[in-house]
Length: 109
Image (cartoon, rainbow, N blue to C red; front, side, top):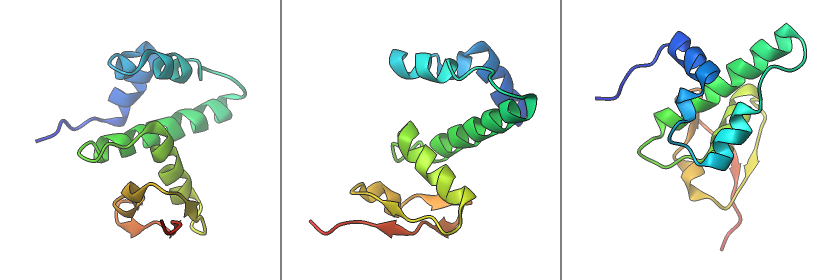
């Protein structure tokens, strides 16, 4: 059974960097460089989106979901009219808002 993480766990992991301790060094550097910028409201929004994106990666840990894939799924969650153009068939498995099919445009091979 997977570990259940609270929002506070995710926030503290973001602050101290422990969430990314096993990540690729380039990814870790890039994510941690997203530190505080802009207004407090912008910082909270960016932090919230990063936390939600990380939750998607955790949800699909049995189907390897890249950070880029998770960002696309998160954007689809935020915009109901979104259509993702991809050749990655894993998007047929991913769901937005837990159960909704994502609109896809997948070219034929």
